[in-house]
Amino acid sequence: MTAPAPHAGPTVPPARFPPVTAVCVASMALVIAGGIVIASHLPRRPSLGVPTGLVVAGAAVFVVAAAMTARLHGFAWGRFFQVVRWVLLAYAVIGGMLAYVFVTDHTRGGALALLVGSLAVFAVDVPLILGFTVARYEAGPA
Image (tube, rainbow, N blue to C red):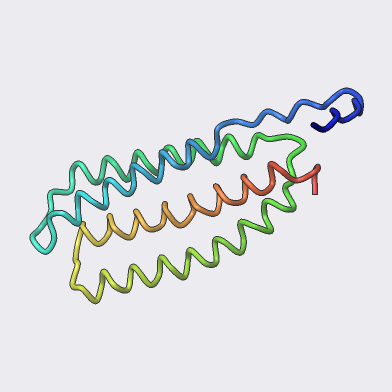
């Protein structure tokens, strides 16, 4: 049995942050659901009402997450932007490749526009999640 560690003094409670990650995940879920509805109808012409609503709702929820992040004080913004830049670059490439697949698969019109819009929202959701998660555990403003 080991002896308990000596008391090192008062512990500092962890900083409280808004639920940015959870809100971004909700945004991604809405966008993915819209993509699933469209894909379930392809190659026939899909009805675009429900997918449009889901993608617009996902984009609106992303804006809420971005606004919550922008209002943070004492946040490690340097580390946040360092992570976001590289992840955004990676997801822009991935999104571009997927858009290319949709075009070469002869997806046209509103369905293509919604799928590309879904990719755009998805491509900014992931960098925000990763940048926020890394920066929140940084020791201080960087």
